[in-house]
Amino acid sequence: MAFITPFFKKNPEYCAWVGNGTQAITLLLQEMGICGKKIAVPVAVCPSVIQAVLYSDNQPYYVEIDEDDLGISPKMLEQCIETVSAVIAVHSYGTLCSIKKIAEICQKHHKFLIEDCAQALGAHINGQAVGTFGDASIFSFGTGKILDLGYGGAALSNDKSLVRRVKTCNSRLPELTEESKQTILGISTLHTSLYNSYYPNEIKRYAGIFKDLVLKGKSAYMFRSPDDLPERVETSLESLDRNLVFRREKAMRFKNIFSHGGFRFHWPSDGGVFWRFNLFVESTRNMLLRILLAEGFKVSSWHPRIDIFLDTEASIYKFPVAERIGAEILNLWVNNEIDDFYVEQISNRIIEYRKSYV
Image (cartoon, rainbow, N blue to C red):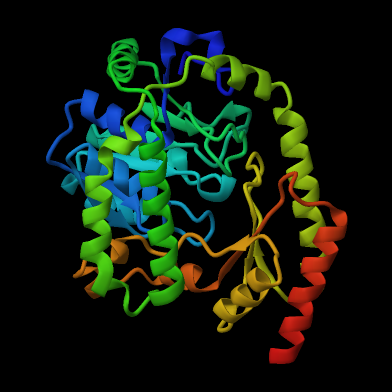
């Protein structure tokens, strides 16, 4: 693609600044004229991706993920590609999904491909930056992302006309309000609460409630990109390399520790980046998670299969890889909120816990 990521301002005609990553996907689908269709998405993914599909008046078509890269399975995608009108391929956790194979499938069947790089800023495949393999791509600069500005996103494409249309749509949106912030927070809080309290077996009882809140919250995500976003992104990109090196160093410390304890963990392929360090804990992950959170450690257990949060009938479908990863994954922070002492502390606590259950 003609633009160069992550240096968005090099080719501004290929980049539309938006309020958030959810809005980026929504506007791309909307401005491509894709409406009332099925959109292929990985079944284990951030809720924001599914919200974007719903906000564009489409329906998600859930596809199993691959255990090797935690992204949408090309094999499973191939089986359903004629059923969908577009594909959203997500580089989850900064790990590179099989984007080349996915792109080949989409090109062969003439399907619109959005590459979601919200957790993978700075990643590349043999020197080619992520965000340059699909028909369009999105990045996010929201809270918790690799480049954390607390807000903002970008939609990129080689299709200059598409980019102009997204820019025009964004320019017509209202400014972000306090009410919108609270709505977005409320949706996120409810998802977390349902997950912590009812996942997986009882979630479907509340799927209708959650989906209704999500649909009613669309307007909260549709706000104009702040005027200072391009400048803030450009300034923050100056420290991106240091940011990524720091994350890799902390991930490597975790790797060195857990390699000697018989633990399983996910290590991205060359070119991947570290949004989190992904450790897998069999059988007792939830108990360990509660203990670590209660003791103030920074951990999470995303992403469980998302379909059961929004569809009361979802439990009849089987996604064994997503279910297994969703039940075992434990994400450890590697950003500048932690230091080497913290790495030792949480690692020792996890090892101590495991000894008590072996």
